[in-house]
Image (cartoon, rainbow, N blue to C red; front, side, top):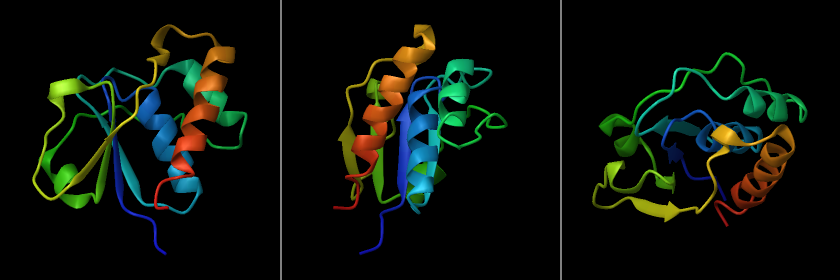
Amino acid sequence: MSLPRVLFVCVQNAGRSQLAQALYERRGGESRSAGSKPAERVHPEVVEAMREVGIDIEGRKPRGISRDDVEWTDLVVTMGCGDACPVLPGKRYVDWELPDPSEMSLDQVRKLRDEIERRVSRLGE
């Protein structure tokens, strides 16, 4: 069974959605990520937590949500962006209640990374 194309969306596209995109792509999935209010950079603790598991996301830049992204995807996974996420008929939506890592320590981000990895591993089942 092939994995669905997934758009991961959070507020700043600097933490949760970046973690999810990178972890999903490592599993062989095709994905994009975006934010309702993109930050200037990916949180340094998120970059470090991913480096620890052999994934380099240092060069990634947060970006906004586009209608093209939503049209491209099979599944939209939202993480705290609320009403700012565009909704199109015929698309599947899942909301993951996850804390924003913007003020987290590296140890807390590691726990968040591991939780996101657990959820990502179930996509496509």
